[in-house]
Image 1 (tube, one colour):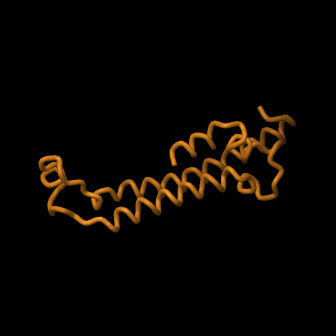
Image 2 (tube, helix red, strand yellow; image 1 turned 180 degrees about the horizontal axis):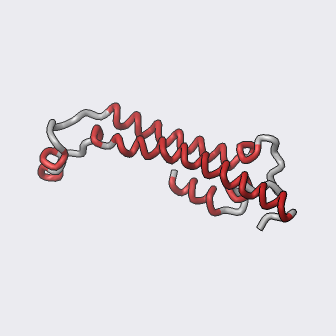
Length: 117
């Protein structure tokens, strides 16, 4: 997932083109570009895989993670990693706000100066 997101973020044909109103003339704005849709699909898939893995796991020992999770370095506690799922949800929300903000900022630059830069 990380490699795909890095490619979409840094490649000239990815997010950079999606938020450029000179190149992306879709009436849906940045959501009309395939890279934004691919990014959202990757984030949703990552969140669902993490959620499925964590909900399907069993706790090996009860108790706080510092006394049970590190016992002889044998146990790995999936139920303790809800923060990772919430991070995936937060990434989904913040990415979409970031894309819309960049689209609006770039559109304002085109309207004021007649070019993107």
